[in-house]
Length: 214
Image (cartoon, rainbow, N blue to C red; front, side, top):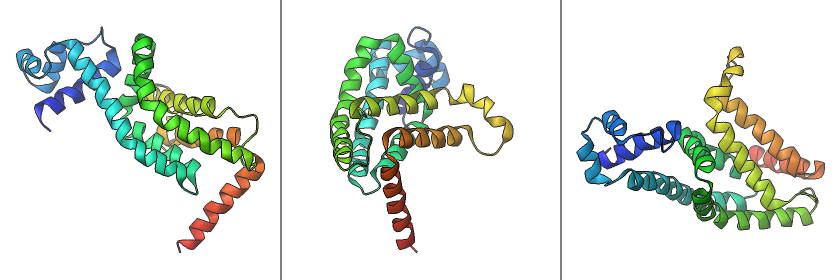
């Protein structure tokens, strides 16, 4: 990993853990193992570094978008879509922590960034939900856009605080905190969106796909 990438990696962790005001360039430089002037060579100011960290998260999300849209078009689109979204945040939980902290600390700025990151796929996937409503698989009273935003909120919030609240789940040692949290998230998301008929059809498609793979 080159120096610039290391700076971004450390800065992401620092901003996610301590926020903009609680993070100093000196602390980031120390964690990377360089002098502050070397950091300023790559990022002339704290604002520049902060902006680059947020842009990197959005850029990586945009890189995942094709997978999300492909998942939305697949036969088993719900489980695939949810797992792709969960994977994006669980592979680097600091993404979720950063988004949550920035949304609370800088709501106006994050509103604009989230429009760029979320809006492109929200409309497309909401269209699939509406078509599933017409076929009777999805509850007629569901609000597709609001539902999808709630799922994102559950994923981001759940991953962001999993290290803190997950200790309650860790006592039985049966499985990891994040596995239990995401498994329950999937159950909540399924039963709140699909009709009983829709759940039966989805489970039937999954069983058919599983038997066809043997």
